[in-house]
Image 1 (spheres, helix red, strand yellow):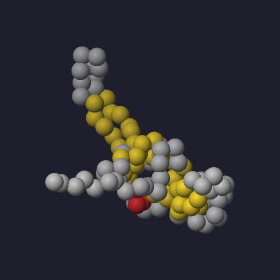
Image 2: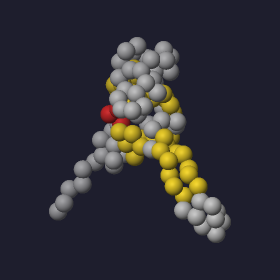
Image 3: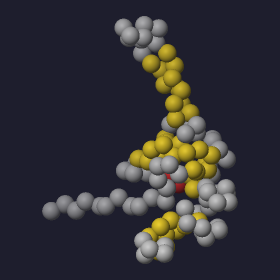
Length: 111
């Protein structure tokens, strides 16, 4: 019987503010719109913009160029700590209620 590997837990999720730490858009920050867990990529608002060519159709006889966000690998993203506003590595530890929660390794604050 074939075993299916469980996808690994990622250090970021939708709604997080992240900073790009490598690539053409290095230094930019934005909000994570979508996380593609199987591909280990994320779509970040206003980062890694691509131009998509829209083919002419009956509804749009002229055709057009559409700017939209491309995906970026999660290894090139770092979560921004909401308390300090600085990019930080994240870890997991138990909070007051005994539930695992992400925290900033730089400041120690929960995210």
